[in-house]
Image (cartoon, rainbow, N blue to C red; front, side, top):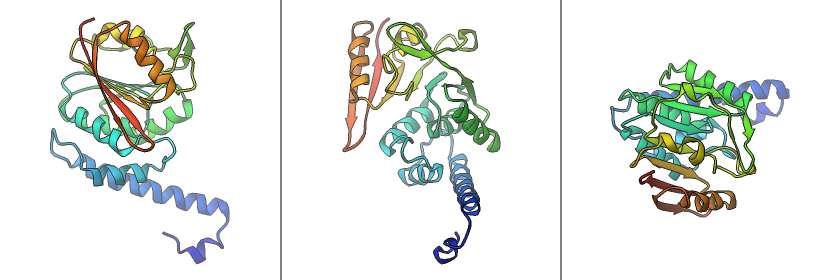
Length: 232
């Protein structure tokens, strides 16, 4: 790191380059530790914390408890995974699920974010993720990703749902009407921000369309739900 006294003398452009270089180094160190984990093992909280800090997206990156939940399920996944919204969880899923041949399909509506995540995947040779750039499409009562369905497998065993953004019409409701036919009984949905009004409304609507068991975990400034789907 550049000493604080010296940092004050540097132009902003140089400071930015230094910050980006340090961030890339931290991400590389954390990902390398992740890649060394034995097959089927989820990372310890200390490694997840380091990875989250290195990612540098504190305002948007998933909280530690949710990352732990995602990591546990990814390490034990038995079939294809769908991720709605890309980011740090994409790296976790891509490394941990690929250990046992599970493919991750990630949909992302932001071209800039898609580019950033794709670059990280390429840099570290994380090949188990199919990252789809999918614009958001207004479908009447909700907005959801516009994805060519022929690129998807017949079913998903796990869904990591952190998109579309909560201020979109319908929140994350579109998952079930558009993907529900590919979610067999026993499949799991990890829903971030589960106590936000848009997600509460989505859960209420889902209950009218599909049986599922629900567990909600909450902290001072975070919440997520684990849904185990029943019969269609």
